[in-house]
Image (cartoon, rainbow, N blue to C red; front, side):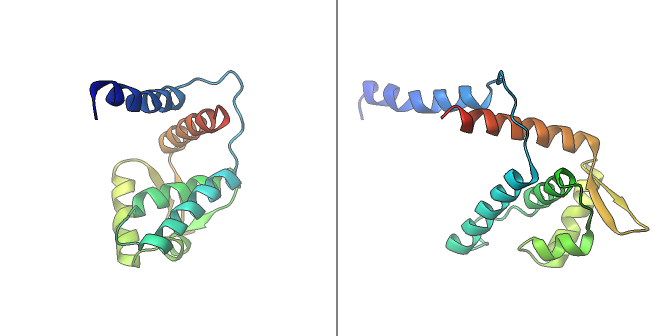
Length: 137
């Protein structure tokens, strides 16, 4: 590959990076269905390539909680453990870690878990960037 080929191959990456940092004029509302679609893609990846190759329990927990909040649903520790394709001990460890980092909050009386306001704001910002990238393609 010569220098011109290398420069040309960098152009799509530069364009994608610009799209991900684009501040769209028209913000589309991100819905629970959008996040559930991302989770479905992750689960399909697990099915096709095995869950040991790509292991994202913390990320999947955050996405499940974000989808639940968008759908105005509550979700329990037990529900999360069942939804995450990892042993319960792994999801429990990640819940502790996410709590330590201030990304989730747990209502101990109900056993329900939710995103902290900081995590919710960060996921909302990330989802807006995805939306900008996908709608501009």
